[in-house]
Length: 214
Image 1 (cartoon, helix red, strand yellow):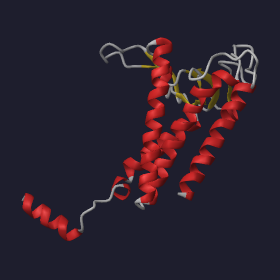
Image 2 (cartoon, rainbow, N blue to C red):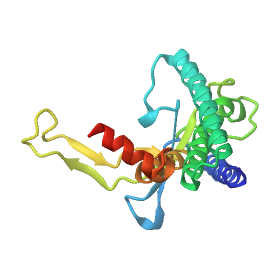
Image 3 (spheres, one colour):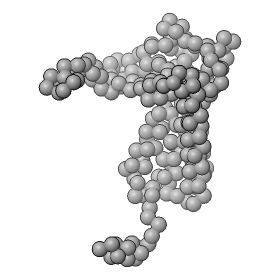
Image 4 (cartoon, rainbow, N blue to C red):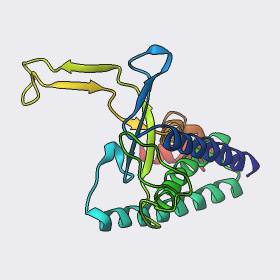
């Protein structure tokens, strides 16, 4: 459990420090190119918490999304506790810890950022512990900043139905440390699923089961 707690602490620390720094040093929409590279940017955006800034149902939808995330992170936390207690594989523990930390990192934004910050604009950075905070508990916006537009203003071939001739950007998602932790955790589970989820039957039992099937 110690290893999992360290992972969770480190991810949350880096995630929240990076978000607070971005909010208090970048105005909304501001970006810089890292090492002068157009495809490696730090760009400040904020959203209600869904992928690609998707929204649904206004404030009610935002509330339901935050409540759903709280339930989900509780379930993930129990999964982690159970896996540690049952001495699950190290890869499984690390993966779940990363997913839990990532989910919790974005929940912190949703729960508290509306109370802690004022509203940033395109020419003004946000203030931490502002008196005129921009919203209430449960309605904070998630901060994203990593942007890797490897291809900008690309054009789909004209022979492709519907989208032929239209421009596109690859990769156009803007994400944060918490999102990255979730992605890495899920990737570990996918690529190392046999180690993360070993079969409970012994080799002899497995042979008997296969023989019965055949």
